[in-house]
Image (tube, rainbow, N blue to C red):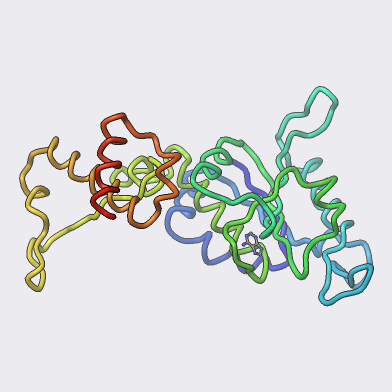
Length: 254
Ligand code: ADE
């Protein structure tokens, strides 16, 4: 996978992309991440990237020219992405913005299918609307709060995508059992010691009975999801028996 990030603050990415799973995925050649400084695509002597909004109001707005220039340069110099029948590049251009569609596990899985994409980190009061209308193919928000810029959001999106790539996780790590991958929250986990300050690991986990353990975990996942995130249950893939169990648990919770 090839990820291009357009940002005014390239240094912000240094730490997070040189540790842990992302670093390993880069080292293994599963993903290449190119950080492009938006300022490098300005044409004026002072490298101006923002200006005050037409109509007045506080703050600054990201100018369209550097972003259009940057995307054009990436498409012509870097991109290996194909073209549509009309000769247009099919490279997805995503803008990180609190106005975008909410990013979730399903979006992470969907985006991880692309071979290549561009992430634009918005800043200031926003970006010129023509960027949204004529450059960007999708807008992504990582949650209903306002960050100082799109950089942290881009890191979140990259992390969630990269861990989906085949081979990104070590042999002991699994995407499949993560919270949310099944649409449910994860079951409780325990490790040694068996007894810690008088708090015991649940008996069933010590039983060696794999079927009983699997059943207990699924029930715990369901119960936890009912209590903490009942909104997730509607979309979760549940068997008829699990639906009945959920109905019973919901009655017990009342
Ligand atoms: N930029 C600022 N806030 C954001 C958010 N919540 N998600 C994505 N990009 C952002």
